[in-house]
Length: 248
Image 1 (cartoon, one colour):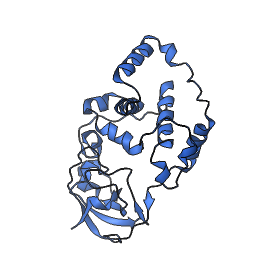
Image 2 (cartoon, one colour; image 1 turned 90 degrees about the vertical axis):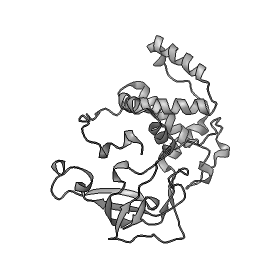
Image 3 (tube, rainbow, N blue to C red; image 1 turned 180 degrees about the vertical axis):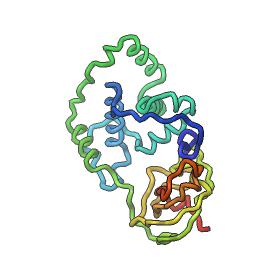
Image 4 (spheres, one colour; image 1 turned 90 degrees about the horizontal axis):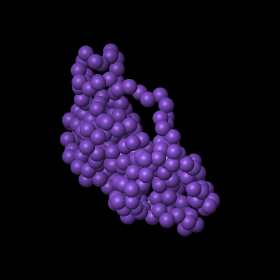
């Protein structure tokens, strides 16, 4: 992951204050709902597991959208902006940019609507119009309950066995990665080999995408952080795609 997602390996940062409330502002519920609906209406679902019959869903959303796209948008942000904005503000920026890039709305239209809401906060609190399309509501609820699984069958056996000592590769994360930067070059022990394989939502420049084995790895915290901030008998675990791992 990019710089702002390397927090596990950076020292000298201020203490992170956890936010107790799930939603701080009412609009955050909306952006969560929009993201959920986008996943439930994504054009990849007819070929996912389980497969969805999208022909009967009268949606005008014809794009590919997953958690991976949301994360990629966050990684693309300027680090200063990433740390300045709250959780759902990052979501809002990524989703808004996606709708502009896909042609659902122009940047000018987005700026105009944003100015209207900033000038009249009560207008932003008004209820959203009903779609009048129960098939869409049904599909969103179905997706919330069933989702789509990344698990796939693979033909090649896993390269590493339980108990193997392995090393995390040094990879160029490019636009998007699922490898925490502070683990690169570190040694770990395989403590679990997951059944079947796992695909990623879309291919990335550093090698994930196609179904492959995934391992649960155990790291010695002293390999990752200063001994003064670790605890006795502490073990750090992380699930890693096979492409990010090499034999020692």
